[in-house]
Image (cartoon, rainbow, N blue to C red; front, side, top):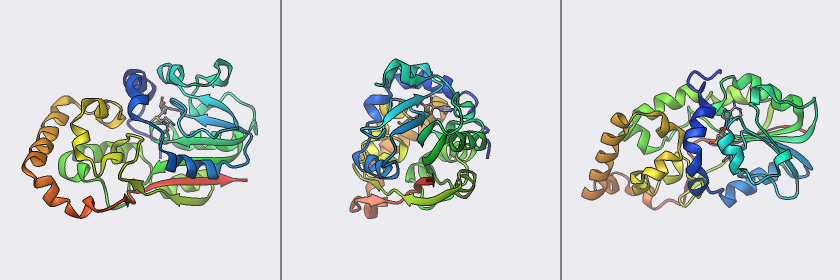
Length: 255
Ligand SMILES: C[S@@+](CC[C@H](N)C(=O)[O-])C[C@H]1O[C@@H](n2cnc3c(N)ncnc32)[C@H](O)[C@@H]1O
């Protein structure tokens, strides 16, 4: 389950990270789910912390990220921000009540090693990720950019492998609301026009990895389908839905 396409992840975030917090606004419903899994933890290490989304209020949080651009945007105190990778956490065994990792696992070059590190440094773990085998998939992947699916399959390990490596005792589904505020790709399943905005695409590491020669013709096709009404005719069933299960899961392990 090592990641064949993430060797330059910190470099990607040093590049795309600057507009991140305007588009990737933490969603209160996901915050509540993660908060429930971390309840009672007084000390928490947030691995792949980025700008600090979903950290529990009231806990003492240590933020870890290999990207300086992301750490600079994290609101925590300087002495609670650590530039490091999940695969080599610079803390003694059992240093924290809990470790959290949200939408970051797919960036780790050695996921199994990183998950073992979460288990070593903390008594409880909460990992939020996406199951690449889950159906349905976002229409964008099947109809416009199959290249995304190829990239995602190289980055996201099957959920069963992640659950086994983490020793997860609980797997909680999170259905994506139609007005989800955290602008990762699937957030816009009912707002297709959002993908026309270059700022939305820039805040997404998958788009950032694809060349313009692939993305631009696909986005032009989407624009034409929105203008002609073809997209709306094809997806009439989605327009009346409030949430869809696209395979996002919170895995919980430990005490
Ligand atoms: C999509 S962002 C998620 C940030 C935050 N957890 C959130 O939910 O908004 C992914 C983060 O993982 C970080 N990252 C990349 N490689 C990593 C590694 N090997 N270990 C830990 N974090 C890594 C990136 O720098 C980036 O900040």
